[in-house]
Image 1 (cartoon, rainbow, N blue to C red):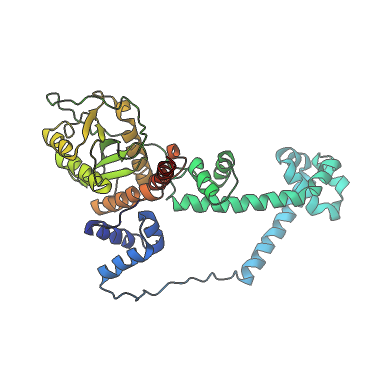
Image 2 (tube, one colour):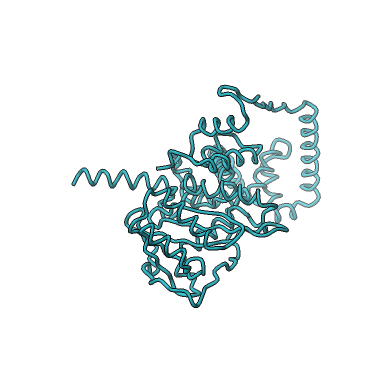
Length: 401
């Protein structure tokens, strides 16, 4: 259900996003934006003035094999380590036995049994021979499990990297399951802890709502029910700020569908005037074709209570809805979206280096949010994937009726 005709601004932003990421491929950027790879390639060619069919030289990197000298050095280091362990065994056997885990003691016996004998080493290290023999008998299965864990850790790391380091255990689990992996989120979380991976965390919220006490208020048609039975029926909107180092901040206005959580419309500007939220609503209307009969729920910010915004809503056939003054819970769905956007783009930073970086990061994340980012309330599917499935089910039921 993505766009078929892309505006010039979208094409220009897509090309700029690709050029701003030297390590990215055209295929990966196209996947983030939900467009065909060749479509993006043609946009880039058009921007470069190149003819179709011409290709930039591909860079190849061949991994250099390890040198023999490096292997020899590693072997010599290992010999010195074994000699040190032998000295520790002779001089401080009880200390060694008390400070090392059972598996390390068994391994030490395995490595030195021919020289010292199993019985003598087990006596010195304080372990029973039956424990050692059990450990050795199960070594094959243990090695196999370790190999499986290592492969799984590599796949988890890849998914984590593809999410720009934002996915935690639940979303990574969903990604792996979609690829055919049979795994639960607890195991994923354990492996992530082992290899030092984690998702991004929530940042403190900056207040952007400035209510106008004299403005007209709309009734609360949502009443904290942030669900919808069908797409294009209930929306929430909000404004959040984008901090830019040493410069004036930018502001992002959003329009989010409560059924699919799709970002139907958005706009970015260096101001918080009413035009910002009007532009976001207009973008949503272009995405849906029509917003007639839909509810638009917002807070009491002066932009949303303005006469100009009310007239645009009436013209589009949209019914306005507003929560209580000063209650973030009355617009929790929009607040949650803003929080996810901030933590997954800034990743702990205080702000973007410049306006261009902020706009490109926002463009990539907001587009990727619809096309690829998994949402827990949608069964770990992306908003567009959910809408496609929703439409298929609705069509099937309609034919059956």
